[in-house]
Amino acid sequence: MNYTAIELLDMFAILAPHIKSILAEDIGISVIKNNIYTSYIPANALDLKNKPGDPVKGAVSKNCLES
Image (tube, rainbow, N blue to C red; front, side):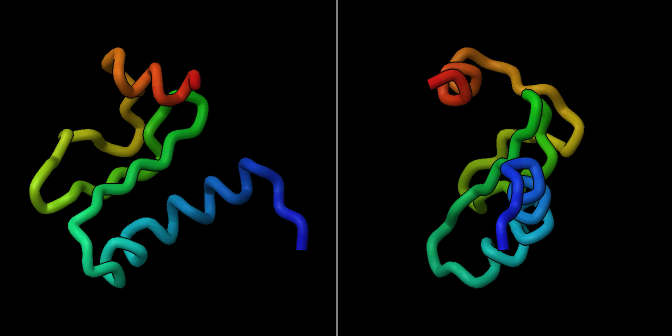
């Protein structure tokens, strides 16, 4: 099956909470589409307080998206 990048991002946003629950490591997951968080699952040790629908803010986050 061939999926578009947008379809894959949408699927990853749906799967993000489940991915965190099956991994042993303390990870946070952010899914961003068009500079908007579509999913945000915080790590136990670090919560950036993002919510789905929030715009990406901060120089480090924006720099990661642009590189």
